[in-house]
Amino acid sequence: MKKSIITVAIQVLALAGLLSLSYTVSVFALPHGRFYDLHTFAGVGDIWDLTCSLSGKIYGGTSGGYAGSQFFSYHWKTGALTIYAPNMGIEVYSLTTSTGSKGLVGEKIEERIYGGSYKADPTFYPPAHGAHFFTYNPNLAWNPGTINTNDPYIMGPWHRLVSPMLPDAAVPDEAIIMDLETGFNGKIYGGSGYAIDVGHDYTYLFEYDPLTQTMRSLYHFAPAANCYSIHDLTIGINGWIYFVATPSAPAVSHLWVYKAHLQVLPPVPTDLGTMPGGRSIGALTTGTDGRIYVGSLEDGAGVIELAYYDPNIPGWVPIGTTNLIRSVRTMTTGLKNMIYGGDYGGNFWHYEPQKGWNPGPFHDTLFPNANPAIRLAVTGQDRIRTLTTGLNGKAPYVYGGTGRVNAHLFSYFMYTPDINEDGIVNILDLVICAGQFGFDPPEQTQNTPTVVTAVGSTVAGILATTLIAFRLKTKTKKSKANCG
Image (tube, rainbow, N blue to C red; front, side):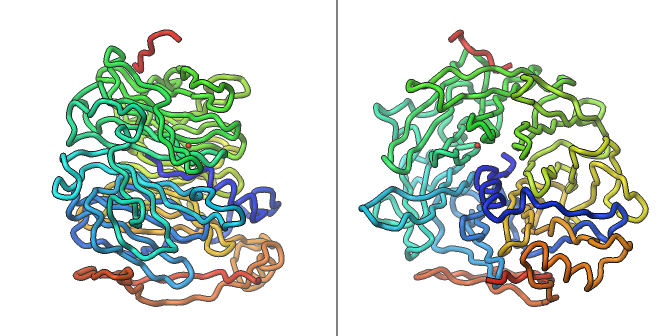
C-alpha cells in the first residue's frame, strides 16, 4: 500500500483551492520543505498505514499482532497524539476515509474511518482469522466490538460479509486486507491476499457501500492465475480503480484497471501489463494530471524505475531509473502534481513531473536541480511504510510512517516558498505567502505531544518525542486472467 488516500487528498486540496494556485518558487529557495519527527512508538516495528480524515486528523495503525497493534490519531492543531485503548483485538493493516451511512432525512453525514486487518484475536473473533473489516466513527465514544452499536464496529472477515459468504482463506492466519481506497462515489474498494506467497486462493478485489452497508466481491483471481495478492490500489481521476496484482516468482507484478462505473454488472478488470523496464511494481499514486505514477521494487542490480501509465494514450511512459532509491514501498501526490515516495532504505523523495530526470540528494544549495530529490526521513529508520497527503488547516503536509525497532510518525511541510526569489526565505516571503494562500505567517512552536487516553480507556508506557513545528493558522483507490 502507499498510502495515498488520493481521492480524499485531491478533493480536499481542490476544495481548498490549492491545486490551481499559481506561484513561483526559485530553484535556490532555502529550503523547499521541512521535516518534523512527530512521535516515536516505542517497541513498535512498523506503522502499516495512515489516512487523512475529512477533518484533517491523521489516523494510523501499527504492527504488533492482534494484542499489540495500536490504532492512533494525530491532531495537527494541538499536536495531541491519541492511542486508542482498549486494543481492538486486530492488527490494523489498511485504512481509508469516507462518510457513514445516509441515515435519516436531514441527518448530518459524518465522516468514517474504514480499516482492514492482518491477524485477529481468536478469543474475541473465533476462529483466529485475518482480513477483518471495521468502521470507526470519531464522534462516538471508543467501545470496540462486533455489534453494530460498538465503535469501532469490527464486522468480521470481509468475505463473510458477502452474500452468500465466500470460502475462508486456505491459510486463514495469513489472510490480509492489503489495501483500501475510497472512490469518488463514496464506496470503499479493497484488495485481499497474502503478504507472502503461501497460496493463490484469496486474491480478491471487493467493494463496500456505506449507504447500503453491503459488501460484494468484484473480481476473484482464480488459483490458476498464480496470483497471491492485490497489494496496492489507487482511484484514477476518471473514477476507475487501478491496482497491482502480485504473482508468484519469477513473474513480475502487473497493473490492472477496473472500470467500476461503466457497467451495472461487475466488469472484468483489464490487464495493463508491466512497467516499461519489466520490474515489479512497489507502489502507485494518481497524479493531478490524471496519470498513474508507479515506482518499482529493486532489480538484481539494485536499480528501481519510475514510470507512469497514461489513460489518455493509453499506455506506459518511462520516467527514469536510479540506484539512489531502494525498493519503493509507498507513494502519494501533493501540490502542483508533486509525487512523493518512500522506500525500503528509509529514503523520502519527491519528483516533479514537469522537470527532467536528475536523481540526487535532497539539498537546495548543493543540488538545486535534483529530481527526484532524495533524503533520509528519520535517522535510524530503514523503511518508510506509508505516506498520505493532509492539510494542517490550509497548510499542505505529507505524513509518513516508518519501520524498524521503534516506528516514527513524521510530517513534511511541502514547501517554504521564496516568493520574491531573492534566495532567502524571510518574513517578507511569508507575508506574501499569507496574502496568496490565506494563511497567517507561521509561528514557530515547540511542545511535547501528549498521548491522550481515549474515552473510557487507559494507555501506559508510551513515550513521545519532541515536536518542533511551524504551524500555519487559518484565517477564518472475459478471458481467464493471469496476474503474471
